[in-house]
Amino acid sequence: MTVPIRASAVLLALCLATGSAANGTLPAPSDPVILTISGTILHTNDGDVARFDRAMLAGLPRVEFTTETIWTDEATTFSGVPLREVLAHVGAQGSHILAMAINDYSMEIPMDELGDYPIVADLLNGEPMSVRDKGPLWIVYPYDQDDSFQSEVIYSRSVWQLGHIQVLP
Image (cartoon, rainbow, N blue to C red; front, top):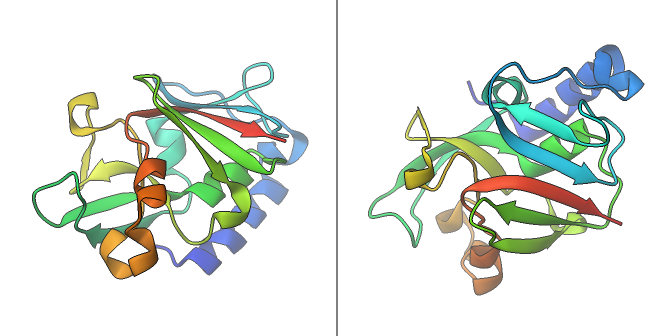
Protein backbone atom coordinates (compact mmCIF):
# COMPACT_ATOMS: atom_id res chain seq x y z
CA MET A 1 0.00 0.00 0.00
CA THR A 2 1.28 3.43 -0.89
CA VAL A 3 0.90 6.18 1.69
CA PRO A 4 0.97 9.83 0.57
CA ILE A 5 4.04 11.67 1.86
CA ARG A 6 2.12 14.19 4.02
CA ALA A 7 -0.01 11.47 5.62
CA SER A 8 3.11 9.40 6.25
CA ALA A 9 4.71 12.31 8.11
CA VAL A 10 1.71 12.47 10.43
CA LEU A 11 1.87 8.71 10.98
CA LEU A 12 5.58 8.91 11.72
CA ALA A 13 5.02 11.71 14.25
CA LEU A 14 2.36 9.63 15.99
CA CYS A 15 4.62 6.57 16.07
CA LEU A 16 7.51 8.56 17.48
CA ALA A 17 5.31 10.16 20.13
CA THR A 18 3.81 6.88 21.31
CA GLY A 19 6.48 4.29 20.51
CA SER A 20 9.79 3.42 22.03
CA ALA A 21 11.59 5.92 19.80
CA ALA A 22 10.04 8.68 21.91
CA ASN A 23 12.49 7.84 24.71
CA GLY A 24 15.52 7.58 22.39
CA THR A 25 15.47 3.81 21.99
CA LEU A 26 14.46 2.00 18.82
CA PRO A 27 13.56 -1.69 18.85
CA ALA A 28 16.47 -3.99 18.10
CA PRO A 29 16.56 -5.77 14.74
CA SER A 30 15.68 -9.44 14.89
CA ASP A 31 17.00 -10.35 11.43
CA PRO A 32 20.19 -9.43 9.55
CA VAL A 33 20.92 -5.71 9.57
CA ILE A 34 20.69 -4.06 6.15
CA LEU A 35 21.07 -0.40 7.18
CA THR A 36 23.09 1.33 9.89
CA ILE A 37 22.63 5.01 10.69
CA SER A 38 25.20 6.86 12.77
CA GLY A 39 26.23 10.40 13.56
CA THR A 40 24.06 13.11 15.04
CA ILE A 41 20.92 11.09 15.76
CA LEU A 42 18.67 10.99 18.81
CA HIS A 43 17.11 7.51 18.53
CA THR A 44 19.36 4.44 18.61
CA ASN A 45 19.20 0.72 19.30
CA ASP A 46 22.86 -0.34 19.49
CA GLY A 47 25.05 2.04 21.44
CA ASP A 48 25.11 5.29 19.52
CA VAL A 49 23.84 3.89 16.19
CA ALA A 50 20.52 2.80 14.76
CA ARG A 51 20.42 -0.55 12.98
CA PHE A 52 17.55 -1.68 10.76
CA ASP A 53 16.57 -5.05 9.39
CA ARG A 54 14.23 -5.48 6.42
CA ALA A 55 11.10 -5.74 8.59
CA MET A 56 11.90 -2.55 10.50
CA LEU A 57 12.18 -0.57 7.25
CA ALA A 58 9.05 -2.23 5.88
CA GLY A 59 7.17 -0.99 8.95
CA LEU A 60 7.83 2.67 8.12
CA PRO A 61 5.52 4.69 5.81
CA ARG A 62 6.15 3.61 2.23
CA VAL A 63 6.06 5.05 -1.27
CA GLU A 64 6.04 3.27 -4.61
CA PHE A 65 6.65 4.60 -8.11
CA THR A 66 7.62 3.37 -11.55
CA THR A 67 10.41 5.11 -13.42
CA GLU A 68 13.01 4.59 -16.08
CA THR A 69 16.63 4.85 -14.96
CA ILE A 70 19.98 5.06 -16.67
CA TRP A 71 20.88 1.75 -14.97
CA THR A 72 17.90 -0.40 -15.97
CA ASP A 73 16.68 -1.56 -19.37
CA GLU A 74 13.02 -0.68 -18.85
CA ALA A 75 10.66 1.13 -16.52
CA THR A 76 11.10 -0.30 -13.03
CA THR A 77 8.88 -0.15 -9.97
CA PHE A 78 10.63 0.86 -6.75
CA SER A 79 9.10 0.60 -3.28
CA GLY A 80 10.61 1.98 -0.11
CA VAL A 81 10.67 4.63 2.56
CA PRO A 82 11.32 8.30 1.80
CA LEU A 83 14.85 9.10 2.95
CA ARG A 84 13.61 12.04 5.00
CA GLU A 85 11.22 9.66 6.85
CA VAL A 86 14.08 7.30 7.72
CA LEU A 87 16.09 10.25 9.02
CA ALA A 88 13.13 11.59 11.01
CA HIS A 89 12.64 8.15 12.56
CA VAL A 90 16.13 8.27 14.05
CA GLY A 91 15.88 11.94 15.02
CA ALA A 92 18.61 13.10 12.63
CA GLN A 93 20.04 16.46 13.70
CA GLY A 94 22.45 17.31 10.92
CA SER A 95 22.87 19.51 7.89
CA HIS A 96 23.74 16.73 5.47
CA ILE A 97 24.27 13.00 5.26
CA LEU A 98 26.93 10.76 3.87
CA ALA A 99 25.30 7.80 2.12
CA MET A 100 27.71 4.87 1.91
CA ALA A 101 27.46 1.77 -0.24
CA ILE A 102 28.78 -1.63 0.78
CA ASN A 103 31.36 -1.28 -2.01
CA ASP A 104 32.74 1.91 -0.33
CA TYR A 105 31.15 4.38 -2.78
CA SER A 106 29.81 7.37 -0.85
CA MET A 107 28.03 10.61 -1.59
CA GLU A 108 26.97 13.58 0.51
CA ILE A 109 23.37 14.76 0.32
CA PRO A 110 22.25 18.04 1.93
CA MET A 111 19.30 17.44 4.25
CA ASP A 112 17.64 20.68 3.16
CA GLU A 113 17.35 19.21 -0.35
CA LEU A 114 15.30 16.22 0.81
CA GLY A 115 11.68 16.57 -0.17
CA ASP A 116 9.24 13.85 -1.07
CA TYR A 117 12.15 12.15 -2.85
CA PRO A 118 14.47 10.28 -2.85
CA ILE A 119 13.33 7.03 -1.31
CA VAL A 120 15.38 4.25 0.23
CA ALA A 121 14.07 1.48 -1.98
CA ASP A 122 14.13 -2.08 -0.69
CA LEU A 123 11.86 -3.63 -3.32
CA LEU A 124 12.47 -3.75 -7.06
CA ASN A 125 9.38 -4.76 -9.03
CA GLY A 126 7.87 -6.06 -5.80
CA GLU A 127 10.83 -8.25 -4.83
CA PRO A 128 13.63 -7.69 -2.30
CA MET A 129 16.81 -6.53 -4.02
CA SER A 130 19.89 -8.67 -3.86
CA VAL A 131 23.39 -7.20 -3.91
CA ARG A 132 23.55 -8.29 -7.56
CA ASP A 133 20.42 -6.17 -8.25
CA LYS A 134 21.96 -3.06 -6.60
CA GLY A 135 20.46 -3.93 -3.21
CA PRO A 136 19.69 -4.55 -0.53
CA LEU A 137 18.87 -0.82 -0.54
CA TRP A 138 19.04 1.82 -3.26
CA ILE A 139 18.49 5.57 -2.99
CA VAL A 140 16.27 6.38 -5.98
CA TYR A 141 14.27 9.26 -7.41
CA PRO A 142 11.38 9.15 -9.90
CA TYR A 143 13.83 10.22 -12.62
CA ASP A 144 11.36 10.58 -15.46
CA GLN A 145 8.77 12.55 -13.45
CA ASP A 146 10.80 15.75 -13.23
CA ASP A 147 13.65 17.08 -15.36
CA SER A 148 15.47 18.19 -12.20
CA PHE A 149 15.95 14.49 -11.34
CA GLN A 150 17.90 13.97 -14.57
CA SER A 151 21.22 15.50 -13.63
CA GLU A 152 24.69 14.25 -12.77
CA VAL A 153 24.22 15.49 -9.19
CA ILE A 154 21.04 13.43 -8.69
CA TYR A 155 22.53 10.40 -10.45
CA SER A 156 25.59 10.57 -8.17
CA ARG A 157 23.30 10.68 -5.11
CA SER A 158 21.52 7.51 -6.27
CA VAL A 159 23.60 5.24 -4.09
CA TRP A 160 22.91 1.57 -4.66
CA GLN A 161 24.02 -1.20 -2.32
CA LEU A 162 23.37 1.33 0.45
CA GLY A 163 24.47 -0.01 3.82
CA HIS A 164 25.26 2.99 6.02
CA ILE A 165 24.12 6.57 6.46
CA GLN A 166 26.15 8.96 8.58
CA VAL A 167 24.33 12.11 9.70
CA LEU A 168 26.82 14.98 9.72
CA PRO A 169 26.47 18.26 11.68
